[in-house]
Amino acid sequence: MSLSGGGYRAAAFHLGTLRFLDTVGLLSDVVGLSTVSGGTLTGLAWVVSQLDGKPFKAFHETFSAYLLQTNVIAEALTGLTTNRDHGSHAWASLIRSAAEVYARPDFLGDRRFGEVLDSGGLQFQEAIFNTTEFHTGLDFRFRRSNKPLTLLGNNGYRMPRPVASHVRLADIAAASSCFPGGFEPLVFPQQFHWPQGYPLATALAALGPGFQNGLPLMDGGIYDNQGIDSLLLAFNRADPPPTLVISDVSVQSPEMYNVPENPTKRGWVTLNGVSWLAYGLFFLTLLSAAILAWRGFETAQAGDWEPKDYFLYLIPGVLTASVATALVWVRARLTDVITLVKRQMDLDVWPSFKKLTVPEFTQMLVLRATSLLALTTKVFMKRVRGLVFGQVYGDSRFKDRRISNLISALTVDRPNLFAKHPWLKPGAHLVAMGTQACQMPTTLWFTDKAQFTAVESAGAATICYVLLRHIVEHHAGQYEAPGQPLNALYERLRQEWAVINPAGAPSQERQAVAA
Image (tube, rainbow, N blue to C red; front, top):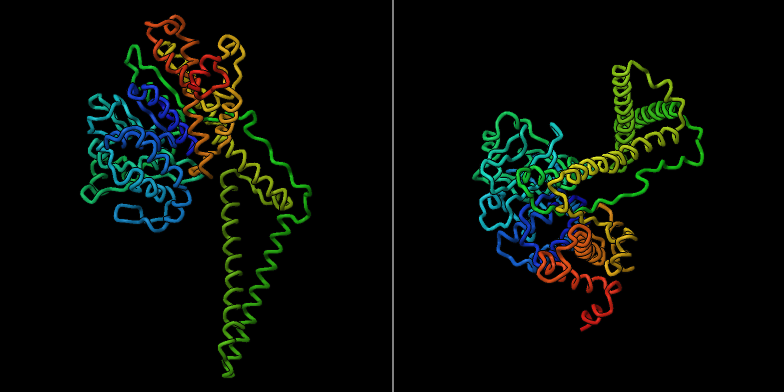
């Protein structure tokens, strides 16, 4: 099972998926787990609950409460400059502060990855929590496997097991959910939290020279937002492999990017005009500072200085001098940029740029920033997703063994399928719920309980729907009659689907549900 990234939308959707699998008795059959970003939050919480021997219902209640109560960004900003203990980086870091939010006692606490590595009570053959390292652009995996000599990290940057054992789970969660733009990279091992008995110096000595300058880690979704690749590698020798369930909250929009409209007026103030205005402001502030200094000096020389003169001469003089200094600094930095561009491109851009009006130049910057954001968050992600799905759907070993639990599944009309199995068609309330789940943005907070309930319930309803769809489409002759391999599961899923989707149930099923 892979749990995709997608912030709290992913965390809640996957939680609902796990809840339904537990309801129908399939959750204990999960032998492989690969998580990314928001999916890592749910995955780690589930793993910790197994370490503690909690029943699923208790885990569901605890983790649901954490998601509802915790705005990760708000709490990380509040603690931005306060969480600087002995093992933390000295500079303020939003992602380090987010790691402290994940390290709260009601979530991951101070638990270490060694508990996961050494546990004999986990149900998984493979449990992989994915990040992306920015030196070579590859997946960097925190992996627990039943196989001996399992690679931790990646081939270029191997992580010795003793080091991995002391990594804090909250730091793994932070690195896996460290999405670009929202956070800065989390540098391994320098910005990870190390226990007093295993300090950073010890970790660096064990890691070797390749890690001395730090390995920048960011969101695992940059490399593979579905977490599929890790499972394909982990089970590459299994024949046949386990059934692969891909729980994915990626939302496919028909238009990834639209060019923002230009301002209604082009304006008349050019950059050259702004430059001359800056020169004028500089000389005015410089002259004002000189006059204030001279008048203050005369007042002091005459012995007439009073406390009010601090506000008449000293403070205004300092402020005007500061403005003049700031203008000189900005001018110097702009000159550095122009010089750098000229050296790199052998081109002097100022003669052309100075003729642009301020709205024109601003719009050029907006277009570049918004298109770059769309490129990194949508275009690239769609391309990577297509490549990974193409790999798994092109692998003959997974024929009839792959199930895509997509957040949009309930909203897609399938006339041929529904004509043959009309009871399977999602009712209007399920379509609305799926649409609401798809519309939730990628955030690390919920605006209200209703938003969480809609997304979590969509996860449960969607996995029931796609499991039934998978059985009727790919396993004909194995589920229709008692005694067949999938009949018991099929009947149980039909019962649950009648509860979730009463509008589509035949009359006799509706009566059974009512009873």
